[in-house]
Length: 383
Ligand SMILES: Cc1cc2nc3c(=O)[nH]c(=O)nc-3n(C[C@H](O)[C@H](O)[C@H](O)COP(=O)(O)OP(=O)(O)OC[C@H]3O[C@@H](n4cnc5c(N)ncnc54)[C@H](O)[C@@H]3O)c2cc1C
Image (cartoon, rainbow, N blue to C red):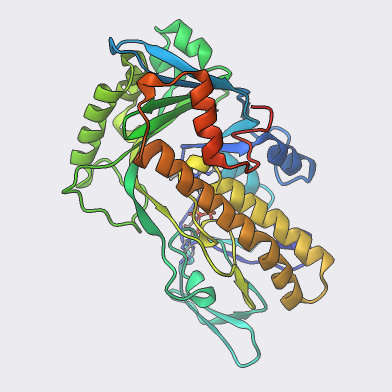
């Protein structure tokens, strides 16, 4: 979308058949970015999204049932449903440009400096520019920074989505989630909970819980979301036990209410890159550096990459120079968000303080120190 707006002919090669709306997990976006996407026409005005202006930090009460409030803050947060966000963006891409069932299996430069793309079962095709927006296992990345691969951070994200009505018997919690995201701190990790829109005008609860898995667990950092019916069943059972042990019982009811097909588990990985473009190849989204999910910035970064690319291609006549402009802006910005994700992981998952001794002032000081003054929608300056 970004480069067709800059006046170029675009072909999208997507390996999946059909649409991707079945990915129903939550995505948080900065309010200002969401406004930009609406005003520039990237998103239609009716794209489903929720404004969540409050964030409440909690920890389990010693009795185990309830919670103790640690801190309240006011993030600039819009929440979306991954599949619905994809669908909204997809409406701007004409069907004739969006080719599904096309797996890219190889890439090379030809003698004219063009990019030659091999797609399974089709003749090779040359393009002036290839944008690798092919996720954290990007094949295009190998042409820009050979050997770079995401590294496992040492812990996993156990995540789920359940209808808001599955906890409607707890009216107080249901109402709280209408405008407040929860962050529940515990020894060795934390849980994030917020509401997202569903496809029918209702709401879902999206949650992500971080913890180090049992030491005997073998993690393949390049595998994505595991399906619950695979060998990962044991890990999901472990995660449920962990949730029961670490979370306030009232919060754990969200995890126990989540249906099996709404659960996922994935290793937390990250990657910085020295460069994000080397003509005729350019990296965007998770292909261009991978941030840990704590920053709520993977999709955000992908969208910022798109906006940065449109700007570079619109204002810089030469393609090679436009890629340099993009690289100069987006490479450091991407690496900076990866570093923030590492610091949050270190302070809120790998080496956690004794939350039972923390109050609002010490929690605010602790979290703010992790951010080190970095401007970010989850921690606006006024907090
Ligand atoms: C637990 C968790 C929570 C998260 N929460 C947030 C959040 O709140 N906010 C946020 O901004 N981000 C969040 N993220 C990150 C976000 O989900 C990703 O960063 C984002 O989806 C990356 O988008 P992408 O388009 O770069 O890659 P992907 O979504 O992986 O898309 C890549 C596409 O390329 C296609 N593809 C791959 N290889 C090939 C090939 N060889 N040939 C053809 N097609 C190919 C794939 O089929 C896919 O459609 C979270 C991530 C996790 C794990």
